[in-house]
Length: 148
Image (tube, rainbow, N blue to C red; front, side, top):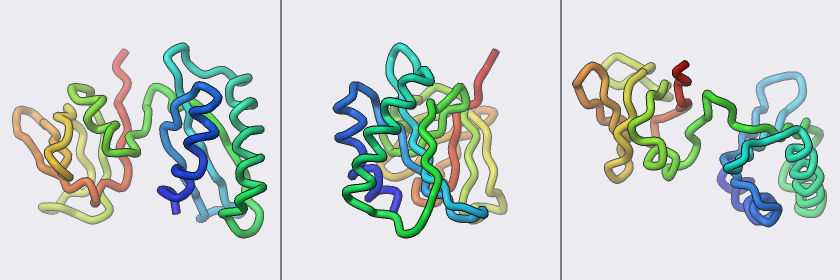
């Protein structure tokens, strides 16, 4: 569903001059949420989010890809930027990241280390000099770890 939404919304977001970082459709709470992350080199303001929200709302109204009611949220990815697409794992190689897998691998689900990029469909993560090879398909959540 998220890949379909990304493909649907990407032309509208990029047409406004922003990068579509990712889309999350969260259904666990009281009311489903469609979260759209945008970015550009100058950063993101509230006005940017409003502009993209109007455009995305129009596309969603016409295409109607989600049944029922939901809340649309448009925001910047923030300092702890989510890594949502394979190209993000290449782009942010060398950065510190926190990963959670959908199931345990060698008894672990959570990892924090330096991102080494991708080797095919495997995420390379250096933790204290040891390289872990984590299947991209198992990555449930990945975020940059901001360093101050």
